[in-house]
Image 1: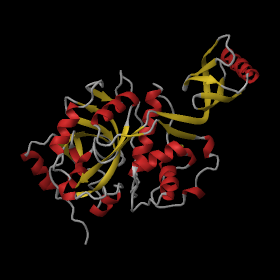
Image 2 (image 1 turned 180 degrees about the horizontal axis):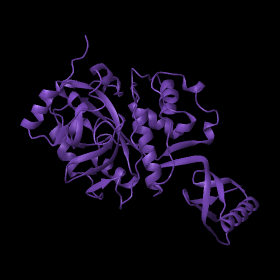
Image 3 (image 1 turned 60 degrees about the vertical axis):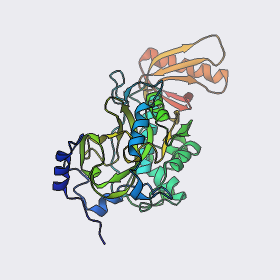
Image 4 (image 1 turned 90 degrees about the horizontal axis):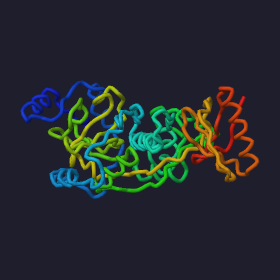
Length: 367
């Protein structure tokens, strides 16, 4: 039997009668059938949990989340840190239960930018690599979904390439035959991975320290119609589990700030605010990373600065878009040669290419 959709007129009445803290609208999700909407989720149910009891302790979870965050600021939003936006644009997972890949890749992009304090860093990671290579190897499919802890482990142990090396298209596929064979030379790896499920204090500290975490939530039918405000579940049946990237929080509004993967036509331009304690957002499954190591070419970098001292191997270059990187050609002669080429390019105002691996320059090209 086909799943019955929530009546939107009834939802509008419910929001008005109960003085809801959020508003609804026609979204990219409400235009779909209920079956199509549920396909755009993608986190399996928690083993052993009865969906009828999911909300029984949400008031306690709300109170615990509000009291958490010792040492963290009372509010944080990755889109406005001292006037700088370190977030990356929302994407659309489309007709595949691949939300875990999107929630994980998005968090790693945010962490890569924020920990380097570089909002111009070009880091667009491949959800296809995560889901159709790593996820497929773990048994994940568009119909089954996946788990964030497995996605983070793959991102840490093997890495995830960039979107241009394996663009995303919805639908099960053998990613090993589609990914660019050079991907090990264009890859990001998560560092300092931690599972912080059920620990709102750790969530706030990780978000404010590293920029973002990945979290799962229970989705109910009214969530598909979310427009803006602080979402709190009011009506509609349970639809399934979903994964998003959390980019902030506000104790004043008692909410988390997240980025979804249903495109900019859903929610507040693809973003949302969800109340503390709602939909097991703190206690379903939450992962954080303290950093992201990059291995890639940075082309067309204007050399904005150079620094060295009399210690062998202590030389640095500042690429205008990339920031500071240490020269590490593995020996003094190679470092000296790279430094000389970079100095000549700086003097002439010529761009260079910098190949970095773990924040160190291993090769350059200059012309």
